[in-house]
Length: 406
Image (tube, rainbow, N blue to C red; front, side, top):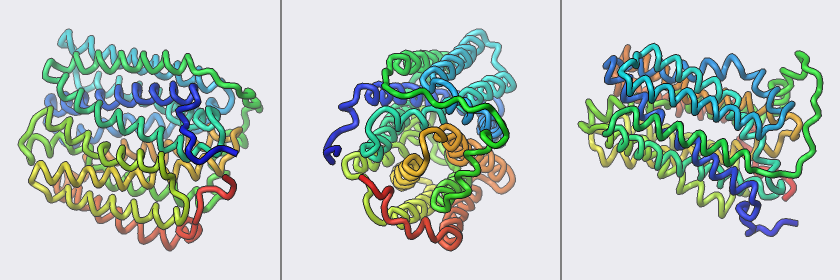
């Protein structure tokens, strides 16, 4: 029996995993600031900002079945290390091209697509790796602590990226590439005692097993799809360069603060859950969090005050973290280890890459309707999804505990 106050950091493998996630997420966030500001400077187009999200989403969508199968067949640490090395190389190429003055919009999109392809394998493999690092009863705490790593990086990364951009995009990309390399070293040093996964022969049945499993679990399907549509409609972060420059009248440093604000709220909630993981009424709590996310999006849409915009983004991040912790814990606890890679791959497409597709949707909507109407539409759409999902997935609404055995 694991004591309720035991920290997951008592396990060295998890501690190294935590710091590796900080490094890789910080690298990605710095890359997002650099690419977003550079593309908008080159094109002055909201639609092109949306395309940044699209070129990251498409690889994850196209590779979802392959990436999940790889995560379940091979050493998950090796898969993550290879992906982080590829990301480092792609971002280093952006740094060199920017320094030489050879950078173009097309080259940026191509290299970002390469990063997106590597992340299509990295993200589900990291999710599947986590439960093997420590005893299962500690998993809800570990999920919250892992989320805190992500949000810590999302706070520091964009602000650091905004500051470094004052020296030019080359400085941002060089720092990002270095952090990807650091993450790869940390993952390489993880040592775990784990029976290698059974390498079942590749077949249509094994490849599609993750999708079949999710369809057979109403609570899991409801949780994943709820976040998919909420994040898809609430992808206001793609338009932050427009809000920063044209609506709030700030520069790269202000953009960095705006990108960091959701992570401030998310980190606060993640730290709370790491100490007090959700125990009862988890379904209702998740729906409340997503609804709050929608309301915060509406407030941000109409704000012309930098301070109010920051506060609304903080609330947005905190409410989103409620959903993240509950959904991630529920999916991991309800999934057998031998299938975690394939289920995590589908989860990554539904959730992680919905951020990129949401950015594309926001860019297209902003180009057609204007920036503020696009964000408003996303906020109200999120609230509508909450109401519909409460009726479509009553099992999720009634879900009381994350798991039955502690």
